[in-house]
Image 1 (cartoon, rainbow, N blue to C red):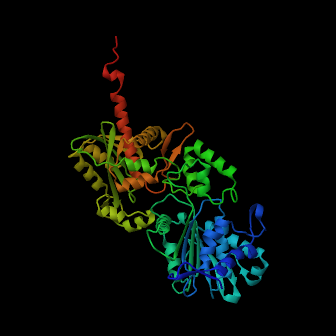
Image 2 (cartoon, rainbow, N blue to C red):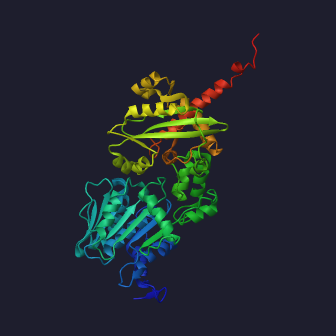
Image 3 (cartoon, helix red, strand yellow):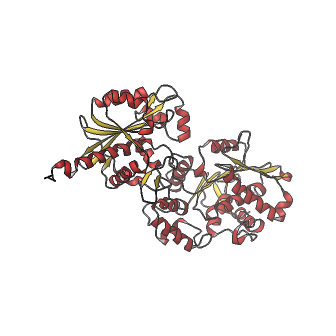
Length: 521
């Protein structure tokens, strides 16, 4: 056994022979299963061997067990991610010297989970030494001689309890809907002497997700902010300030450029992203591993963050309200928009049913309970939003501010709208299609980029802004797309409705016919 100590005081040592065996397992026992290299030995690229496989299986503790127990590997698409994951799963099944090994491939859904498993099974089928030792089934591989097994799971599996996992490979962690699968599997490793959990993913766009939590932790471990000797961070990504159109940035972010993915493909995808704004975030996220705010780019969050100033004294100032009632079981949003000088100041209010608020927090992966405690959300009693509370709140606000109009979705102009009209408010039906939403959507974007919107740092509105995806028609009209957006966007929709009424009022006020600039004779 070859050992290499980093210092005389360290509790870890490097087993050169073990590291070599792990790398050689790929080339001697495994073959590619798809593409132009199908059937050929699986030789690891240098970055795969030196950054991932050799550290994972070479570094040991004093007792000879593995140093690393968790690896977070964030690499762009087209870097051989699934092939690498399948190879690691097979090492853990066949070559980890773990009696009764339980290895699991996991992912957000059955289809995604099956990708790595089917690739691993194809590798076993193509390898005579492995094939002789194992029996392959539809969703499992069993090694009778060691009583070991490799199974595929998904987050929607019926049960995930009763496990004693020795090896876990989770693919596309950014797509997991919650942390349930992760928690169940990782907490099942307690009885194992050297368990290994490998999380492999591309960047995502949900900053309230398990994946971003792991990414943030990995960055801090990598940068020495957090000391965790059992955690291996491997992150290939472009920086926020890097020129995403430059081949220099491409090579920095994508270790497989020129090998697993051709530079011509990269150049073509980059050109597409420059020509189609809606594709820009997709290119950045999947091929440069940059965390983005939305699937389809609308407002850059760095621009949104600059629109954060304390609200001025708005008492008795004129405002326009947007009211998005959404559904009675989710979030209702009321946004007051105050046009003062060149800036529109936003004062938002959000309403959510108190009953089931924890379940909604888990579903949406945001701290509704915390927001309610700090006053950013108003929790109404019961399992549905109490519209009477909204009505009462609007009447209360009208004592402090001059609410000129309330824009409301004409399809949601319910009994509440009738009551508010009876209270003396002017209700304006506001459609959700391109005709009504395109102009305020474009104006809102312009104002954010010009820092002519002030949201005062409201956390709920910030979350909703980060969720918005935009839909465009062939004529270039724009509107928020609730079906494609990543989470709730009700507050932004309400803000757009309020801004739309400001724009309408400005148009009417600015008419040359009304101003007397044209004289009829």
